[in-house]
Image: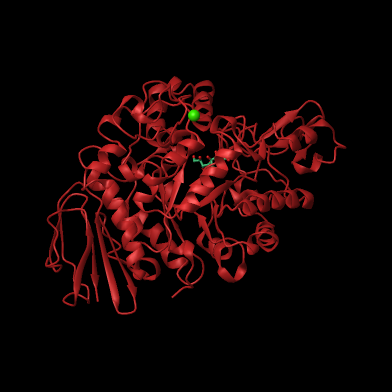
Length: 562
Ligand code: TEU
Ligand code: CA
């Protein structure tokens, strides 16, 4: 069994503050709004909150573009509000994990103002400046938010690197003074008492200093530069240094957001003996449904592919390292719409998906609204959207390829980030009780049916199902530490697996289809002491014969054998 740690036994709840709860009627969620809802989170039973950025920011990318690391965004409140939140959380035995965005800052950060002012400035080297190549950008890399990763700056006649928006210049981690400043800032928050960090695209911070061109596909202007900045040459050195100089002195949890990370690399990032991070977020299952054109080229996905990915990670980090488990976040569509069925089986499939994820080995993350089964949204017009990634992509497709707007909207409905960012639906009153004013992004029109108040009144709600899953993790050590084994890997309808610890075995069975299916399960442990731990179908019982099972659409159950 792996070593015991509090963060392995915890469930994390992600808050995207802009969309969580507005306390003062300006249409924007805020810190006081979070404090007001702590008892709701406590009722759900979670242990840790990961708070997306609340720092001072001009909001080009909703706070992921930071202007001051040690100030709170005016729209979200004040440092006093933050201190109160932290205190109220700790009073309730809840931990607070901050978002650490140090691959880049805002272009309005004072460091960048200095850096761009002249080539001789002492902060010049805090960012990545290059001369052009034959009158063009230094490399052909494409930004995650469309266009080049390089922005020409007239003042000094050089380009700066921005892997995301041009208002998010990348920091130069080769510079040791910059690294010390980042560590100092981290200590400041940790000394305040925060309980850890979720680190934004942290596997992008080490760039290949040769800055080669990417391999271009025919007919397009830019190429992916990711081989030259994902898991770059000095990444392990930097993270080890950060651990050595900062993290090791605090009892905190860390999770690195890492697009493009492989299991083999994750073993290095999370191996306990290596002293880098506790966990990573990998993106392999988030790529399900990506077509040759990437995420906007949305295609059907296969359950066998999902099982392959999840199992690879479960087995890969079994001895060393630790998994983080998530179905969605503020960048992804809502899970019930993506992998479940948000029409006639919304509640059933939301509970099935929760079962499938929460019974795996790792630390589960719940994204705000997931616990009440919030769904994707389909606003009529592009004017209704706010997300920079979505808007830049839409405009580029219109301008460069004249793509049919309806086709673009279909992609946005399936995969756009604003699906996750519509305000949390608290009750059936106007604007779902999120705000008394006009919300910054419209509320999903289904709030009258789907809201927290309704969920809290219904003992069979998705909310109480999550509550039960969380309690099971507290009661059953096997849920945290048991070994995972996939069953029936070729099955396209059912995701079934076991967990084992000592003499105990869990059997987890999830029907991912809207059909009734029959399966003959003949695991070796049938016939021993059997207990039904949780099920999303009232028909399921302790005495059911597992040798031959009929599963209802989106049914899920968990038995314990001992
Ligand atoms: O996201 C990193 C990232 O890779 C995203 O671009 C993600 O792939 C994309 O949103 C999905 O299409 C992090 C943050 O989570 C995101 O909100 C920020 O926009 C981004 O970094 C830049 O800070
Ligand atoms: Ca507000």
